[in-house]
Length: 145
Image (cartoon, rainbow, N blue to C red; front, side, top):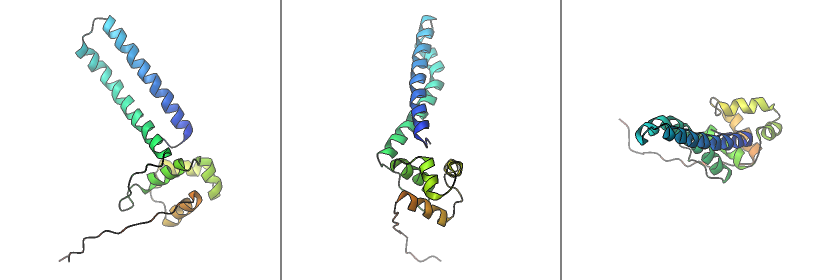
């Protein structure tokens, strides 16, 4: 997951380089006499990496537009906190300042996607982001046993 604008810009640049490299390899292989099947086998691993990188770039762009995944039973809450920071246009440094912590702490929390974070910590992050999360409880009310 791309978490900063710097990572996003680097990923976009890398993606452009990957496409260019694939095109260059394909031209070289064609000139070496390889057939389309052989070229496909050689290019597929490069394409796989490019597809993954493109998906990460597209995800970051969706987050910047405010398009978030649904959180079910708090699964994915950490990714949602990161997404909200990105959407709000805040850097990790900005969030750190609002929370009164150092930037490396935010970087660690986000790298771990807030795994193991206390409810209090999550609430502080939500407050710093000026975000309110509303929950809906859905249960199967059949008797058990």
